[in-house]
Every structure is written in C-alpha cells, then in structure tokens.
Length: 159
Image 1 (tube, rainbow, N blue to C red):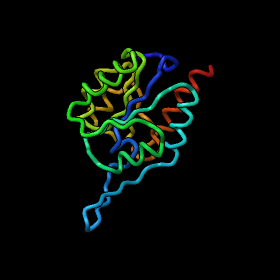
Image 2: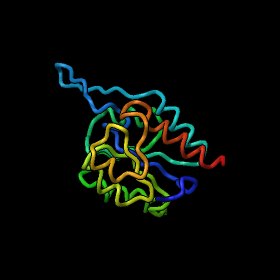
Image 3: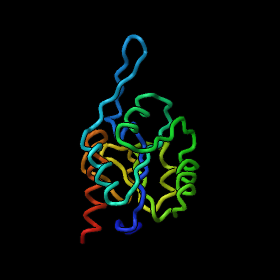
Image 4: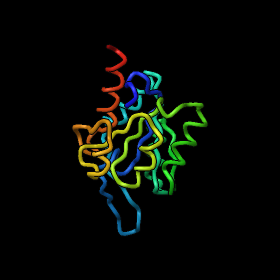
C-alpha cells in the first residue's frame, strides 16, 4: 500500500461511490441520483491540498457530467475498461501508480484497482472489492466516501 502522504490524485467511480448506487427514473426517461454534499467539499479540500480528483464511469449520463462540472473535476465517461482509463489519466499527468488512489464499489472496478498504489472501497462495496481494498471506508456509497478519503489523506499530510 502506498503511503497516504504520497497520493497526488484520487480517481473514483461515480455510481456506488459518489451515489448510493440507486437511480431515480422519471417517466420521460430522465435519470437522477443522490449525492452527498460532503463529497463536494471533499473535492475542494483535496484541491487545496494539491490532490486532484477525477471520476471514471462506465455510464454515459448527463448527471455524471453535471456533478463533475459543479465540483470542478474531470469526468471520463462511457468507459468499458477502467484499468486503461486509469493508465491514461496517470500518463496524461506523468504520474506513477504509487501517486494514485482509486475508489471503486463493484467488480467492474477491479481493473482500475490493479493500476494504482492505494485501493479504496466504500463499506457497502461488493465483497470482492472490499477484500482487495487497502482501505474500506466507514460510510457507504453516497454517504460521503470522498469526504472520508479526503480527511484521511489530508490528515496523513499533517502528521
């Protein structure tokens, strides 16, 4: 496991991490999700600490773009191979795997886990992710996972 003080980027899945993994569907087909405002503050705190945040999602959904834009973070969507997406994000920034954390909640995040130095799963993640995670958060997806991670990373730098 990478030293928490060395993390320079947090890459996160969207559904099941920044949301509670449920979707609201209106009769006209529009979708909505529930997100924690604590994660919004977390992105600001991470940015102030010099740690970037990026979202990677298998979905191609305007709600992901809208949330990422509001938080001032990059969103990579319609991603079939999250491992390749993580490698591309790191290469674009000239970062090594040891510089990166990935937060994921389900088996489609396992490829991304293999590309980073710090693997994180929400408390309600699939058992396979929790078993492979270096850190399992106390809160479930949608409950402020990014905020808990921000507190851990920033707290480690202050010691």
